[in-house]
Structures are given as structure tokens and as C-alpha cells.
Length: 166
Image (cartoon, rainbow, N blue to C red):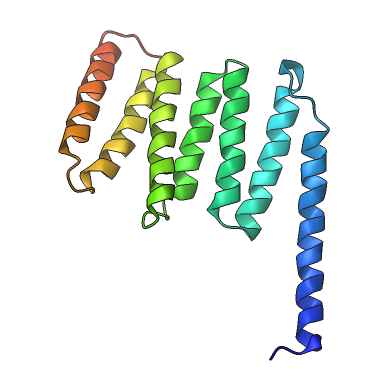
């Protein structure tokens, strides 16, 4: 049995953390989701993500990183969206045992590659595909996926060789 002397400090600590998170979320909610406030909204989202990385697991952190990617995509900033999606991959890289999180990681890398390619950053797209290929190489029965990724990478490298990179 846990005594009242142990519950009160735990509850107090929890309430302090929730209060801090609420302040961060209120700040984020006050910033309009329009192009002229994109940098402010990005900074606010990154503060929320940083806080959640310190006190919470990857689920909430990833959710806000995905929101950040969507914000950048909404304003046509594919490179920034791709980078946010690479951060999703990093945040989930330790969660390989959970199939649902592994699928989110794969989806984030696929979307990051698409974002970089659409922005003309073919070298970054090729690196994202390389990370994706490494994941598939560790899965059973994924040789078709690996072959498809290698074809995509070859096309990107051909374009890079022709000087079509930023």
C-alpha cells in the first residue's frame, strides 16, 4: 500500500507537469495557422515536442512532429515537412517491436522522400529511401520492397548525376 506521504508529492509533480504542458498548448493554440505565422507556430510546436520528449514517450512527440510536417506541407514547404518527417523516424527508431509504430516510421520515411523529391532535393530523398531500405532489409519477405526502393534510388542518383539537385 502506498501511503499518503508518497501520493501527495507524486500528484503534485504530475499536476505541475500537466500545468506546464497546458501553458505550452495554450500558447500554440493562440498562434493563427496562417502563412505569416508559420515560424511562430513552428517554434511553438517545437517547444511542445521538446517538452514531450523529456517527460513522455514517443507517441505524443510523434503526433506533434506529424502536425509540424502537415503545417509545412499546407504552406508549400516540402523540405521542412520532409525534415519533420525524418524527426518522426528518429523518434520512433527505438520502437521497432511495436508493429503499429514501425508502420508509422515507414510511412514517415516514405513521405519524407516524397517531400524532398518534390522540392528537388534529390540527395535528401535518396538518403530517406536508403533509411527505408535498411528497415525493409531487416524484415522477412520484404525483398520486393527493397527492389522497388533500389529502383527509386537509382533514378534519383541518375538525376543527381545529371546535375538536377539542390
